[in-house]
Length: 231
Image 1: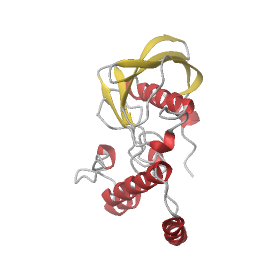
Image 2: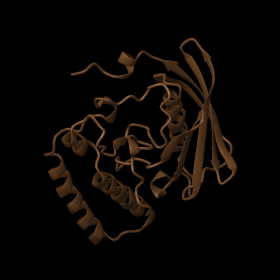
Image 3: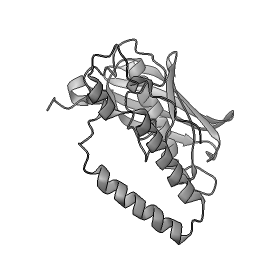
Image 4: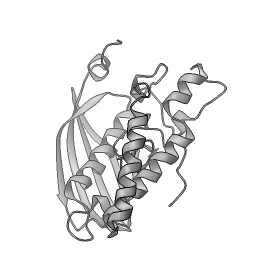
């Protein structure tokens, strides 16, 4: 397993105006490590024929840990933290989705995909090697997971153009089997805008081979429709 990449948006900083206890409650290095360990376990349980004795041990440990975790305070959504500006103009920081618990790029999500995402010029880029738990047909990624990777990368374009929006339509063309266990890269960019309509395209490659491409319609919304009211 690779060491978890730090989520730059959640690293404690002396310059941050947010109190240290709140930062520590939200995302800490050990939380990222725990989430990665659980993702590793999940993929291993799918890929290996584990005997019942070990499964019983894993089950019992997981139930005890879950019972203890349920006594902890509720975790706030990362995008609702004070000072978080997901759609601030000019925000081009790499590996900075602002959402460590996200399904695709959130390194703190133990059920997530654990992808690495960043901005490169006017393109959003996502890189990942899918584990066994995301397999559909033997050796191939589930089509829904492929669409999810593309939708996530397209959504990152909204941060580049500093515009909140939601997916209105996503059309994916599956050009070739998307492999599990091989490096994947998705690139997306804005190609047009008409009023509230945003037109975004993307391509998914595996080691130089185009395996899927897509186009989507996103509908812009006001910030108050993207974020719920305080309280």
